[in-house]
Image 1: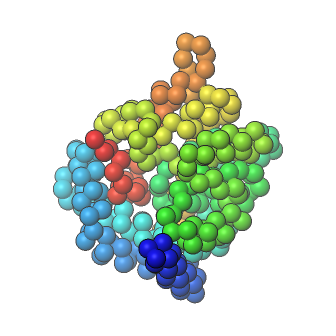
Image 2: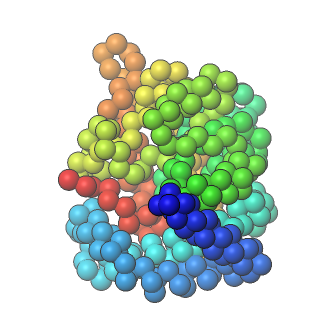
Length: 295
């Protein structure tokens, strides 16, 4: 009986999520993004996640005062609200250099060069701006890739996400105990692999992030060590509109140990430093709500 009730509850939540998705589609991209950017700064500060966010800001950016922390927090809630509502339009946002999504000519040239090479690469990103866009851009340009993602607890919503994301992003690999095997298989098949590496990973090496020790995700460095695949960083930068600039950096020279192989811990620390630099450029575009520095 409990299992049936739980299943019915998941189904009801999924129905609400589908209705919200349909409503946001009807609103259109600009209006949906604006709605999320208006509502969440009002509701977010009422949640316990807001306390976590303020703790993180005080820990990571102690040189700023309380008013500056509050301003960053408000913009972070706005960005999250916009990103959530833009999700319903991910298949419509794409128009590289057509108005909504653009890049520096160097980034576009690098993406075309990687496509021409046909060699699998490892790409890292972070929860910045609309963090779904780099995967969409790469897939729409013709890159054959796989994306590591976190599976929602609701099985119906998880199925909906796969149905909506797979056609515009490529293969989706759920974060699980089997994920490393599937990621390695994707690289063996010649696919490139992308992942967000800025959240806490309890079993990972503890390396500095904003000057504080943080358990960090070592998967990308481990794969680079095993496959000797080149490593790139890709991010979206939010501009008014909604409009986004895509930036690609790399190949990133990863530190190596005495044997000449990629040093996993030192490489993980390097990726943290790169992402920290991205966040410092505009702290209001990062997802400050998660427990990144859990003791």
